[in-house]
Image (cartoon, rainbow, N blue to C red; front, side, top):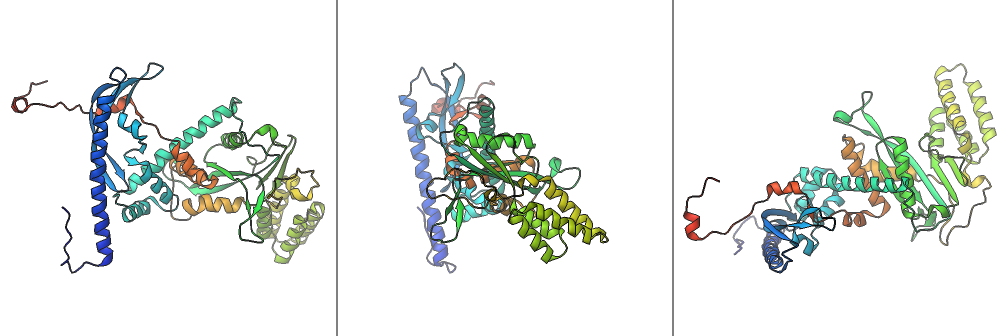
Length: 451
């Protein structure tokens, strides 16, 4: 029986609410424990005894939104269709009970939601205040690592299928917009580079066009955005990027691809392919001009020429600036770097809408607009959570979190979480299993044998 002293001088509505909430959660935990164990006994009695051989009882626990539940369940030896031995919990199969370690998926989803916004320590504190779950920040970290690593394995399987030509989505579009950029994150431990302290995480998105935001006259947003992110070699990341396209779209139906990037070699597509057009990101162009041109009025004029697609005039004006600042070593050096940057990406300087391309008509509700959403995507997806907060990362830990952040950006986070878990346990886990044998009173008092 639960009692609350009404004579408690410290009692107020907030405290009363918290105490009653915890009492109700404790009652719910006891009820759920009883139900789980009754179901487990029922499944033992009604199982196919030839297919499922009883191997004992295992004490376990699970963290839920109501609190920690300690209960017992039976494990069975089973051979699958291939004849391979497996050990399964019929209770888990019956309830489709998916867990991340000893955390229920319901609680794991809430941990993931919070961990994508805040540090693992704050996530654990939030779980304690908003649910009856008492978690450490290490538990929150473990949940992200386990779920993120499963997403990474799933993506590797996706890449393998793509490389073998076994991947082709069913969505048909004639035009696909693609953007990519990198974000530098502080590293720790063995993953810290010998020079400097940061590594570049690569980020890319695909989308089908621009549509108006609801309730806004001038606001636009990209339509059907998918995202991917990871550390690693450029070649491997481009495989992932292309695999993400092939997973959703029928690539044979894509007639035009417009790729927007800052000019890094790993972003540039194979321009020899029909229908592929590269555009140098307008934000990066404008930023480089403002950083390298000494006078603001001169920078504004150069940016205007570039935005209007007047490339020859832009280089002529930049050459005039180089002559003007010949005697200023610092200014001349910056202008020279700007000239080389623009020259190396000359094919992408003209905005795609000013090239006179014969572009297909987009589906109803979608429009062609200037590209350059990548900077905002990188900020919302990676920077706000993983950068500029005195944080440093291991490569594996950052990749695991980035996979979940990319899934949220793509709008598939909960779909991915639902598809990641199974009910079987490995044979190695049997080392922790204990078989319980019921004894009579006389047997219990008898001295056991040495074995």
